[in-house]
Every structure is written in C-alpha cells, then in structure tokens.
Image (cartoon, rainbow, N blue to C red; front, top):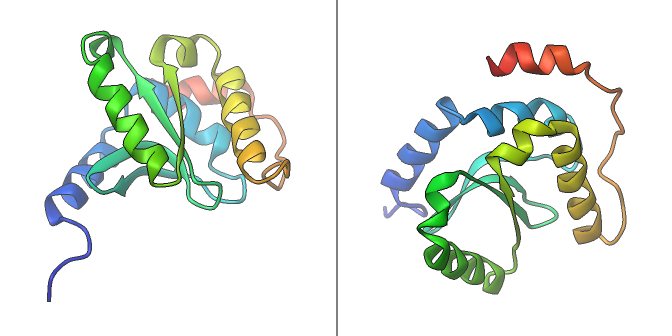
Length: 137
C-alpha cells in the first residue's frame, strides 16, 4: 500500500520538530494552547511548513539569514502553497527573538483573519517572558 506522504518528508519533519530553531522555540509556547490548534513542521507535500494552523490554512515560515540567498525559491514555494489554498506569512528569526510576544500576536491576528475575524480561542493568560526565555535557552 503506497504512503500518502513521502516517508522521507515525514522523517525530515520529525527531525525538525525535535530540533527547533530558537525562533520556533520562542513562539511555540505562546501559540500552542490556542484553538484551533497550531502544528509544528507540518508536511504539505512537497514542502514542510515551520508552523501551521490547519483549520485557518495559515502557514508561518521563520526565515534566517540563509533566506537572503534563496529569496526566489522562497517566493516560488509561497506561490505554490498559496495555490493550494494556504496563506503564508514569513517572519525573520531576528524579529521573532527580539519581540516574541509581538510575533505571536501577528500570527494569531493572521489566523483570526483567515478564520473570518474569529480570534483563536481560548484567550490564555500571558506567560511571563522569563519563563519563555528559560525554555529557549
């Protein structure tokens, strides 16, 4: 029986989930408890999206300095995913690390817009930034 998703993509996504970037580690605790749920390293063949909300069909890509050199490839990837019905936003790692709460709010606002203005629920209490940074380090 053939696999629905290439096993190599699944293996790579699992590896990326187990070894998140600093930006992913900073954002995850800020958006993980919202509903509809967010997923890390979601396989959308032939790509892996860094952070996604399936219900909103929102994908978030965290870009580091290597993305300066591959801007054209990133644009083609974004266009492909958008043709498949996804909305893709890109955030620079440095911006996320400088202001994780602002980045999380941007992600949640985009999800709300994709969901027709309904803010993801429940609205959680704020995590003190010190707890987030302890997890990031």
